[in-house]
Length: 178
Image (cartoon, rainbow, N blue to C red; front, side):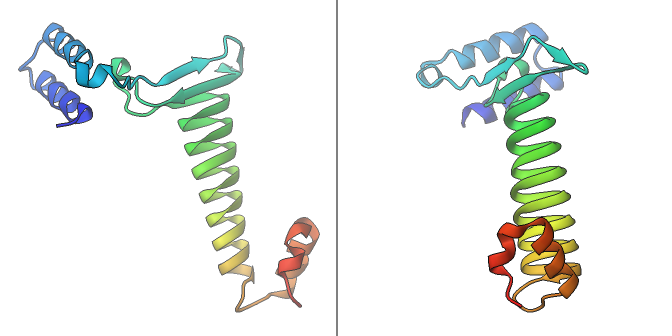
């Protein structure tokens, strides 16, 4: 049984009433201090700016687990957020949500990632008003597999889409053949 499974087992026992809060805290502390786990610390990073703007820290970082808080993944929330999960105006993370989102799964007004969902989405799989990617779905879509009202793909090049992408994304021009 690994650390996460053992902690989940203890939490379940506590939730069922088999362990008091004190017994649960003691067992968790003992588990985290065992030599097998103390050789390789698994404590994550949690930092944030003391300055706030609109109630959010200017920057926040949350990476890795924090067992004392009961978090398996770090969730950073700030204007500039970096974490396993990041929520902010500028978000960078495995799951990123924000006005400008960069990550494995990016959701935002401007989203860039492996899978991107947004007004402008650029990624391996892109879904948005304007979508650019291997698989792209949007009003204007550009990609290997493009689906939408105006598309540019190896199989079809809508003239309106070609003009749109040439005007607003000139770096794509060399990929468009008329």
